[in-house]
Amino acid sequence: MKKLFFAIYLLSLTFAQSQNGKLSPRFYKDKRDVFREKMPENSVAVLFSAPIRNRANDVDYVFHQDPNFFYLTGWHQPHSVLMIYKNPQVDELGSFNEKIYILERDEYKELWNGKRYSLEAVKKLGFERVNTRKYFMDDISNLSTYDKVLIFGFNNDIRNQEDDPFDLFDLKAALKKAINFPSSFNRELYTVYQHILEADDDSIESIREEVKAHVQLDSTLIEDEIIKQFLLYSNNDFFTEVKTKTAFALRNYNFDLVTLPQIMKDMREIKSDDEIELIKKAVAISVIGQKEVMKAMHADMTEREIQGIHEFVYRKYGAADEGYPSIVGAGENSCVLHYTENEKKELDNQLVLMDLGAEFYGFTADVTRTIPSNGIYSQAQRELYEIVYEAQEKAIQASQVGISFDSLYKLSYEIVSSGLMRLGIIDDISDARIYYPHGLSHHIGLDVHDPGNYVDLAADMVITIEPGIYIPAGSSCDPKWWNIGIRIEDDILITENGPVNLSEGAPRKWQEVELLMKQESILDAFILPKIETLIK
Ligand code: GLY
Ligand code: MN
Ligand code: MN
Image (tube, rainbow, N blue to C red; front, top):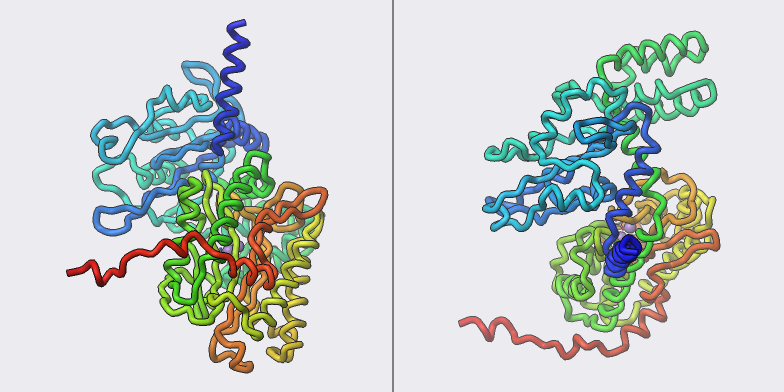
């Protein structure tokens, strides 16, 4: 009976956590189990937490956990390492197949920077083995005994804190040493070699195309004898020889930079119910931000003020952060795709492009609305807006299971290009690329541009649909179109029953935007004293 009560108690805890929006430790444990199933035999994966970045002098940027690391651990602190083993390992306590290394307790540092956790507390989060980070250094001395050590690679852009012998820099340096990572490593060459090793009779032609694409990006690769031979000769006997040479060239390495990102793409592109719930919340919060701004917007507002209203709404709903730097650009700034200065003070009658997303327990929305600062779209603004709207609407409707990302993009491009032709802005369909220079869609999740394979849509993906038209001043078209930039972006859940627009609550049709902008805002009454009156 006691056991039953305890089980109910545990269940209620898990339930309470998901009601709060936080995921339970079980979620992360399940992800690690799925990950392990996908690992090659006798391999180990090593994942690091994100680095701490310095802002200036002795002030750092707010720490943001690495999304892959967070996805598999839920762990939110720096200088940590996760190891997942394909096969059970044995130590003095018995068998285990994963281990996390964390910061040691330190009363003084905790006084300044906040709580660290005991090993026991972290064990309760479902990790089989927990140790402090310095033991990582000892535990990796046997990495040569694994067939593969799965890693992401090293960016070499981390600061070494001189007074800390076990910071992320040192942990990564230790791993490099343990796996004989070459000091001058050619990642492109290594990736191409991996492709060659994967090739078999069925896949050789497509892999040749892939290798050619790498060579186009980095022409020095063609000087490599193995690559040259792989591309030039199709004879089968010869192919076996090329493969043997490739394996020989990689014989001293047991690290693998390809499998880990691939597993993460395969896992993260399909969202589980818990993830979808959190994304829905992040999107709902972002929608409220857009709607409140539509009501509050006046032509005498500044870009910064508009950004502030969105972000205030996010905080009001408990979102800790934005998923990416907020983009609020009016007029010429609306034509800069990732404009983040947000410093323009005169909005006049211009369109304001607002691309923002709340981050809720790590998951981010990505929603864009483009609205007239004075509440009424001019004729030129409206004509362009209607093209973007149509491209978006058709692409959303077409977002069905099985359709490819590529064909969705082509559909949107066709609508944008024929619209621009109709308005006399371009004479040639291919010129639409000048004014619609980005892709249509990406996954969202823990990253705003979430990893995925970007082939065909499948149920439980969450993607953006975001066509745009941007006509900077000086473009070769009638000046009446200049300085108009429009993007409409929604977050779409793909289901077997068709697309679900999670951000549809924020008006998109120009008539609906204008209607909402006529409404009063509670912020109209929020009048602060002029700063000049306060300064002596
Ligand atoms: N907010 C960045 C993007 O739309 O992809
Ligand atoms: Mn986007
Ligand atoms: Mn966006």
